[in-house]
Structure formats: structure tokens, C-alpha cells
Image (tube, rainbow, N blue to C red; front, top):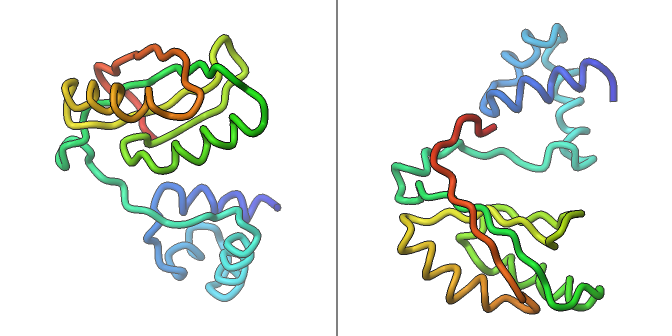
Length: 145
């Protein structure tokens, strides 16, 4: 990966709907080489997809909570079971395994605190091997890239 690839990635990260002609102009190449580079970046898995940036507040998902999760078992089978189960909970937007005093950090989006409480009690706490959770509620999002 060279500087041109990094420039292509930076431009597409900011504006994923750029036409190949616009992208080519921004990175200083002609359209065909840019198209070939983008296809290669997609094929290699560097570009994993394209998405719309949605105003979550407007669609009723404005409440954000971060949840620290401790598991009762951290052997491979338990981690795999937890990881698979997390994928089935739509309110969990992100799940990160941590090197910390807890095992996972979840980013959870819901309509409001009451909805979050239901998700925590009925879904997150019921995930395999969950022994403890701690919740941190976001009051404002300053940067969301």
C-alpha cells in the first residue's frame, strides 16, 4: 500500500459516494488507475464496504451506553459462545474484547434509558458466561467518525 492508496482510502472514508472521476481528480490520477486500485483494495479486504451515515437520533436510537462485561469463563469455547451470541443482539452496535479489568466493552444503542434497561436485563445479562456488567451512559457525542 502506497501514498496513493492511503489518499484514496482517506477520500472514500470522508465521502463514500464519490464517483471514480471525482476520486481520481482528488488523488491526482486518471479514472482507470483509480478504479483498479479501488477494486484491489476491495478484493484485499481493505475496503470492507460502503455505508450511509445515519442520524441515529432521528430514527429513535439516540441513547448510547457503553457496557463493561466480565465473563465467568474466558476459555476459548466460552469466548466463542459469547461472540456468537453478541452478533444476534441488534442493539449492540460494537463489541470489543479488551485487555483490561473486564473482558468486553459494548456500545449499545437504544431509544431511551428504559429501552436500554430492558436490553441490559433481558439480552445482555443473558449472554453466555456474563457474570457482571457496568454501564456508562453517554451524555453527548463530541466526535463520531
